[in-house]
Image (cartoon, rainbow, N blue to C red; front, side, top):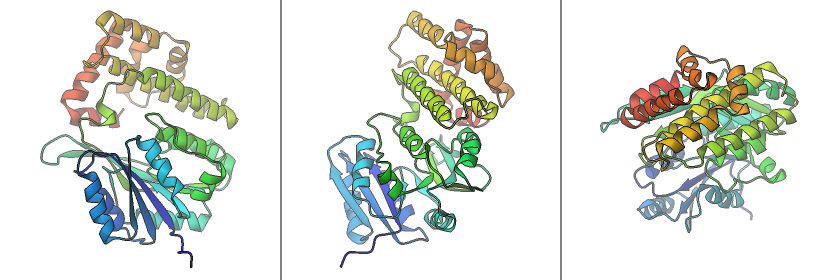
Length: 356
C-alpha cells in the first residue's frame, strides 16, 4: 500500500548551523498540525549539524535527513523539492523558528479559500547582545483574500512594500503548481526572490494573513546581511529589471501606486549599495569608491527613481538627498556613516532601518 501523502512538506537546507538547527526543527515538530514531512538537507556541513539532525530523525519518522556535498541553499532546496510529497510546501531556514500554529492556520486558510499561495506576516528578530537582547520588528499587512488574479496584481504593491513578497519562508505554496509551471531555485545568492517572482507571475488565488508566525533571525556575524558583496550593485540592477518586467507583464507599468513602490524600492536599495561600497572590507581605494558611487547615483535609473519615489519618513527623505542632488562626496560620507552604525551598533541600525 502506498503511504498517504502528508498535508505539508517543510523544506529546510542546513549548513554549519549546529547552534541553531535543533531549535528550528523543534519549532516544526511542535506544530499543532502534525501531518507533515520535514525534509532537511545537510549541505555538506563541517560542524555537528549532520549528527544533530540524524539524532532527531531517529526519534521522529516525520523527519528525513539528506546528506549531500556542499552545493548551496538553492541546490539543497531543489533536491528536497524533488523528494517532496505534501499537497503544500513550506520553506524554512535552519537558523530561524516558527510559532506553533503556523502550519495549521496557513493550511486551513489555503483549504478554505482554495488558495495557490498563502502569505503570512513575520518577525525580524535582530540580536545585538551576549544575553539574548534583541529588537523585534513585525512585517505584515491586514488579512485579505484576493478573489481574482487582477485584484491580487493591483494590490501586490502593498505586499511588496511590507517585504512580504520577497522571501519563500513566510508562505505556503501549492506543490502541484510548482511542478506544473516547472520552477526551481536558481543557482545564485539571494535565490529566494527569483523563485517567488516565478511563482506569483501568473498566480490566480492568493491570500494573506496579518498574523505573524515566522521568526527571521539576524544574529550571526557571518550572515548574508552583514558581509561586503562585490557585485551587490549589479544584483540590485538585475532585481529592478525583474520588478519592471513583472509589472509590465501584469499590465500595471503605468499604475501610479505600483510604480511609486517599485521606484522607491530601487532607490532605497541603492543606498544599501552605496553603504556596501563604503564597507571597510571593500577592496576598492577611495578614488575608485567615489567613481563607483558617481556611476550609481548619476544613472538614468537612479534619477528617475528619486524623482518618482515618495519617502515614507523624514529620515529617508534626507538620505535620498545626495542622490537627488547628484552629490557624490555627500553620498560617500552618508555611506560611511551607515556602514559604521551597521557594524558597531546593531540595535540602532535595526531600529533606524525598521523606521525608514
